[in-house]
Length: 166
Image 1 (tube, helix red, strand yellow):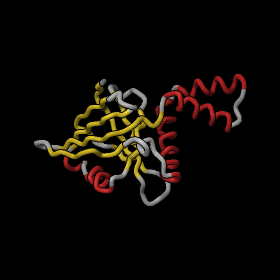
Image 2 (cartoon, rainbow, N blue to C red):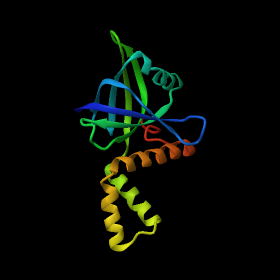
Image 3 (cartoon, one colour):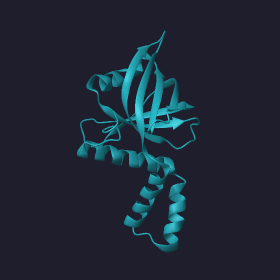
Image 4 (cartoon, rainbow, N blue to C red):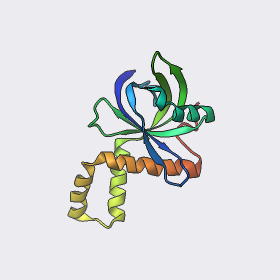
C-alpha cells in the first residue's frame, strides 16, 4: 500500500440541470491510500461539521460520486476517481469520511482525449503537434473536462468502474 496526502477534493454532483456541478470540499486534512488491490483506492477526508451534508446524502442513497482529488501537492494534476462513501465518523470537533473508489481516468486517457479534440477541431501535421504540446501543459483543466464527460457517460449508460467490483 502507498499513502499520500490529500490536498484537494472536488465532487461532481448531479443538480437540476444535465451538467454536473462541481463542489469543492473544504478539507481540514486527508489521506489517499492506493490499496493495490484490483485498482482500489481509499480516500479519507477530514471536514468540519458544515461539510458533511453532501456526504451523508450520498451515503444514505448509496450513490456513487465522481471526484477529482489532488494528491501530495496542490500543483499536481487532479486524479479522477469514482467512489462510494464507506463511512462517516465523528471526531472530537470534525468528521472523518472514508470513500472507497477506483481510478476513472489515467494520464494516457487525458492525452488521448486531448488528441481526439484536436483532430475534431481540424488540427493536423505540425500544427497538431504544436497545439498538443500547448494543451498538454494544461492537463488539469483537460482532466476536469474529461471527468465531466465521464460523469455524463455514467449517468446515461448506468455504468461505472464500481459496477462490477463488489
